[in-house]
Amino acid sequence: MINRIQTNNIKQWIGKGKAVIVIGPRQVGKTTLVRQITESLDRKTLWLTGDDPEIRAMLDNISLARLRTIVGDNEVVIVDEAQRITNAGLMLKLFTDHLPQVQLFVTGSSSLDIAAQTKESLTGRKFEYPLYPLSFTEMCAYHGYVTERSLLEHRLLYGYYPEVVLNEPMRAQKVLNDLSDGVMYKDLLTLDRIKKPSTLVKLLQALALQVGSEVSYTEVAQLIGIDPVTVEKYIDLLEQSYVLFRLSSLSRNARNEIKKGRKIYFYDNGIRNAILKNYAPLELRNDVGALWENFLLAERMKRNMYTDYYCNAYFWRTTSQQEIDYVEDAGGRLHAFEFKWQAKKAKRFPSSFLEAYPGSETAVIDRNNFEAFVGVEGR
Image (cartoon, rainbow, N blue to C red; front, side, top):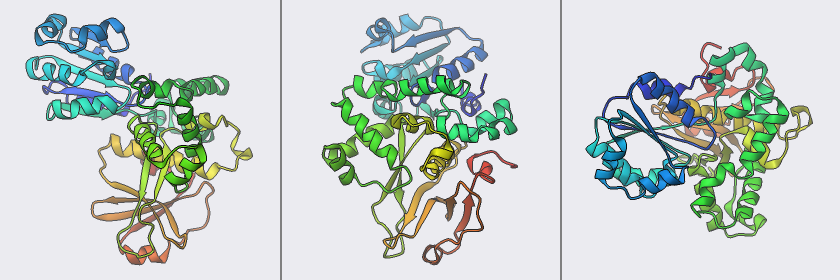
């Protein structure tokens, strides 16, 4: 069993009278995580899944009296895939307001309706935990640093989805293809948030090809034949569904800094490669730099979220094409990082950046020193 970092983060808040909400993309192990935790509690437990039409009909617009009947004498209740339930937020509010003795766990495959329905109704009544694909840190804990380090090139190609990490390449490709062909976007399509699935595919392909580069919504719109407003809307939905995330440009001091730039990355390299149907080995690819950058940033996002490391994240670029891959603003200081697959002699960071932001820390992250950056200390 691969232990998840979020397990201990969640356990410390059980029994505090608040709902525990685990959200993230499909197939990353949310249900497995909650099952492991609830089985360790040794309390009478009720499972309710929103994927079951009968359960949905039972819970849709439910009254308090009926909810009490359904819960009975169970001490723990799990509402799995809650985004499928009509007015889930109000149902969960009934739990926290009137059944505080019941420890409630909720999972959702996207933040779309879960967040919208619970933000107001569960204010102050919930702890929310995102769960992403497995991380380099979690896999080091599972089968050791040496083994996981030896699989680095494999991870750049196939990523960290649970059903992928322990399978050989052909099976991994099948899993990733299924995910990228629709499983990941099931909620978007079911909720009718995206009208044309074929447009979504074209958008994802365009974004996958631009990992590591600045993205223009206007250019993408022209490329796939839709308007920029729709491009931005779809990207918003994909970000809320934990398929991808955005970095905005840092612009505070220098006149020639890019003011409104953005870059887009995928939470999983395997999904990015599946969208492009490209699993060629690194020695045959011309996008190794993009794969490495995407891998490092996805792992950093997991590390920051799981350790409650709060920072603002950016990239930096000027109109004269000076650029820094990644900048964090944490604790009142900027930390600037350059990503290089091949270890090279020390890089000189742009003097215009260092002059504009004195006191900034800088580091080059390559495959010989990346471990601490992604959360594995002491390497």
